[in-house]
Image (cartoon, rainbow, N blue to C red; front, top):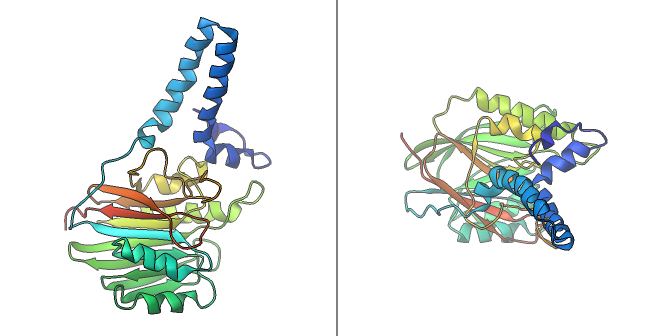
Length: 283
């Protein structure tokens, strides 16, 4: 658990161990059963070591964060959608989201969502299969290919009542044990964009196809802070059935104030949606 990122990524082992690192704590339960069976006091004492390691690495994030409940907060929602993108968009709009970003939009879905949200979220910009709908005006749009040669991300400025916010919407390439090079390239490139972005306030949201324990997520994690989750446990978003196992969807910030995030079931996607409430500090 402590040194999972040092495990060589041979045959995809590093990718699997990195993203399943929080689940390694389940081994503690097995060891506890074995300890009870053996009746050895020393075995119980030995269990304190991995329990302490898990607690230090994942314990704080597994505790529910205080929800940001302020009319001045900016509410941002994100989801990787499926066939019913309109229902996802409506659910997120009804949740109070000021800005909605959707990924993996299929043929005709951008037009359908734009029509469904034209009254509540009239400002819109899309690149390829990624779209952003906003209550606030949008400006300075820029498609981002992030090293792939075709666009799977974008950045844009949101003119909120508290001042401008630079917003990144990301759909990283898929990651499989033997094929995650394109995703790694995108995350590295995104980290470089963020490092060179002098905006006072930045929010990034989307499907990163990487949890924050993934070694290749580090270029992004060094630049942005993950929004704390208000529920018990980690904010795992995929898959929705039979139960979520990975935290591959994220909302991250820099230069903002207090923030919190909740998980929402929307549409027919195999991803849970995330809705973050962010207080915008400064001007």
